Image: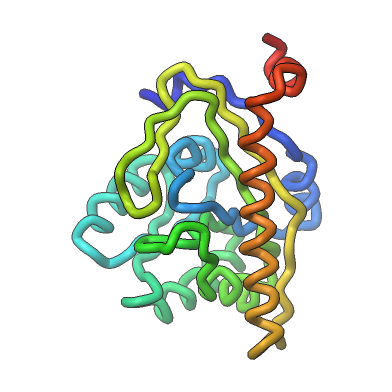
Length: 208
């Protein structure tokens, strides 16, 4: 209900479209802090899957995601991760897109965990940095300062350039790539958040 009140604009929609034109599927990469508005927005990109932990909380979230049209894959870095990655590989080759929370479910905030790169390596599909930023929001006192855009807020979705990860990447090169993706996301989040301070940019996007 809350999500239906948002006014949404997309920056970089052609990046997503070009991936799909190449008959590839994107791995949408997002911070845990910002995924709320994407729950309903990306549910329209069917078929789409997402990794959800095997915890008790994860069970509830899994049911909600399934109800909204996502295909939940149960697992995390601490439990069931290997099985989940195997299932992702199968789903991707069936045409499923992937939503991936890069620092979840326990953080630290903004730290890209290796699972994102492993999904990209095993599937051969591109990582698509996916940024959400809201003009008005609630911020919760959680490990990630979780954000929910307030009703009727204006919300920006922004796609960064796609990132491929070589299957042969290992060791120091793997960690360098992980750091590159992490820094790219941080930069894109900071740049997108700063748009709200520029009335001309806001007017250009929303026309008001």
